[in-house]
Image (cartoon, rainbow, N blue to C red; front, side, top):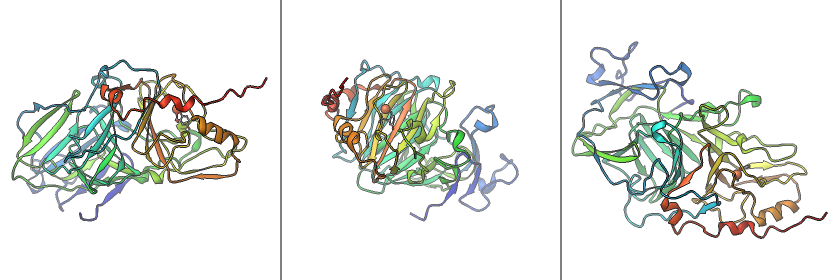
Length: 430
Ligand SMILES: O=C(O)Cc1cc(O)ccc1O
Ligand SMILES: [Fe+2]
């Protein structure tokens, strides 16, 4: 793989050509596009979206995207979509071990398993939470979701995402965003890959407002990286494109690689971000702040402050709060919390929440530190402590997250999860 080149900045206007002269100058659709290319616009928002939210990219490609046979339904495998009503959603706390890696040769698409979701994709609201687990690269196979944008959170194994607009390499500790509709194939750089994949049916992820924090901090725009144009000029054989459309998988054959964009300009493009760049802000006086302080990206809804989904991380950080119970407090929330762990340990759980695993605490369901953590943190000497070698994250969403039947029935579900709180003692001494 040649050294990959990226632009810096979140949601910027970029212009890139993989071949000199491929990008028209001063206009979008010349009578004849340069180098015999086809012009095609890809809109990620309505044409009339306000400038701040308007997303579109002009592509100059070897063939237009329309050149393919009709799509036909293929099996959905373990992929699920709205309505998430296979089982009645329990108010109980749920937790899972990591899903096992495939023992056979399975690519990213075939290795997708949906754990939970909410909302209504046809109404552009809610999310689906999938786990990917793959042992094989996609070569002549491509995927896109018309249902939502995709947020990759790798936990095991490096990936190369070959997208229509360029190539991104991501490693555990980094994330990638692939906008709705953009085709890609996933190559494995290691023998096995596993991670979390959030499908966001709602408004596109953006950087959160910083309010009193000011002009800098949390995830800084310049640390998001968008690839330069790169094209694949293969037209020997068949190239299967799998579309996720209205909750179902459909497939068709192209006579050429759909990743044939030689040049593009615009602001609707994939990007990646190294979570180690997150400028983490925390209490330097007392008390444990609300986890909104850890928001990397937000997908707002029409109700102020009520995200369709927030992506928050719990990265390595110093804990210095005085006269404070430092781990997360016991709580019951309006919002619904799906958590995953990329590496290390999470400070609210002494055991059982392991890398590749997941937990789900839905609306108003009590949760917080397990008994061992409560005991330890209540008695710990409050010197400065570095929480290191850890990376947990949360998909926090306004709607109850409904587990799939698979998620409830799988042997990976920890049916004894509730016991981690049962040893909490009565300490009340009036
Ligand atoms: O572990 C959790 O439940 C997530 C979480 C973390 C935190 O620091 C405060 C509140 C919260 O819900
Ligand atoms: Fe919580």
